Length: 58
Image 1 (tube, helix red, strand yellow):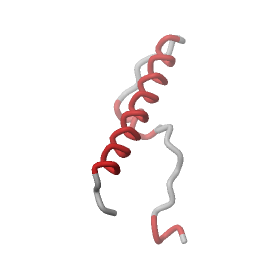
Image 2 (tube, helix red, strand yellow):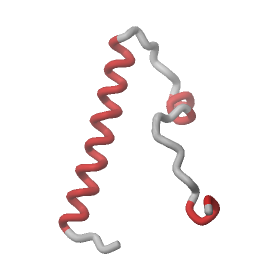
Image 3 (tube, one colour):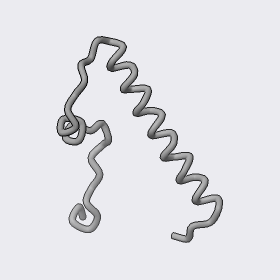
C-alpha cells in the first residue's frame, strides 16, 4: 500500500474516530456507576472484534 496524502488522512480519521468512540464508551461506563479497572483488565477485556491472524486463519 502506498501512503498517499489521502490514505494518510483516511487512516488518521479512522484512528481518531476509534479514539472518540472509546472515550465516549468510557464516559458512559463511569456515568452509570462503573468502577475503575486495572490496566490488566483493560488490556485483556477489549471491545474490538476478534481479527483473524493472517495466513493462519485460512
